[in-house]
Image 1 (cartoon, each protein chain N blue to C red):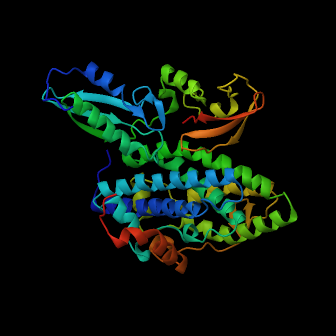
Image 2: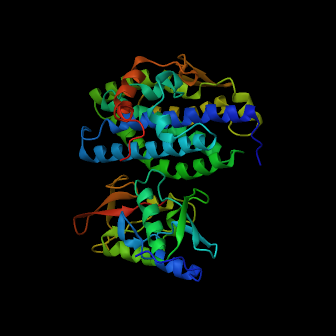
Image 3: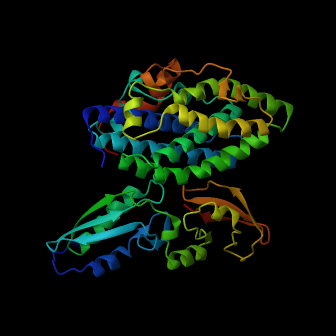
Length: 166
Length: 264
């Protein structure tokens, strides 16, 4: 439903609305939890400017997310411009704790926090999201989407996916 | 902040075409393996690499768009072979699996040394793109290195195929570092380093690694630096290409050219 422009919409309400927009490739996690929304600016006259930064530059979901964000803000009566920026670049350290928890629940191991040293993620033990065993091995640094790698759990004999560190 | 004089702008545009076209074509060649790679894991990997490289090409075409060169889709799909500035290396057919592995490895290391340098470029949009893409490329190198290390020494046949692939790829790969007319302008403006600097860093990395995989590399380390035992294959950065590019473009651009501007 598109309502008329309401200059009274607050920035907080916009962030709350954006928390309803899910990442199409990890549909339990919102774009806010993913850390891809950098800023929201309101001009007080019914227009919003949202800056987002892609996880991977070749991510095919960027356009879908732009449209979903604009549609969501239209529900608040806002006319939104969604800009894609690479500055500063997205890193997996921007994933919120809630995003990491939700990933585990769908069998997707979250990346380690690396503080800029991405190699940390490859050295560190990856815990199986199903049985919590640390006895796992990397099968393929590439998976069904750009943001996932494939691992195998030697304890419960299950392959699983991991969200890559960037 | 970098002032874009007409000369600097031209030097930047020339450079961005080289970057974008190399990514697009290597990505296209990788995509040719979708459904055909020797094992499923490799198929997934090559398809992802293809998607990454095309995404990177798009980033560079967007930078060209900002400089007034036109729509990224047109740049990728509506230009003719002489307008492409990729190294001939990037247009060579995918060949056998060994050639694919060797080319991807040589390409990805070249990209890594280039992007590491460009992360400090005085042209900030290019520096931002380089910093972002650099991290994504780490995963390509994990893949490439593991295949080179495995296939180099594995069996007599795999060794022979890898050596043959390297013999063919290496002189062409040197063409990635072909200097162009406007290079001094870029160096002066701190946009990009000289190609010979990148070539040295690339050789420092690839030669010892390939040798550790039992392959012979036509380059020797001497007191004054690297001595190349083969002639680089140049021309691509000036728009001189092989028939392979024509054939590739006919396939890659066919649909777009049937109905330019069609909405999907």
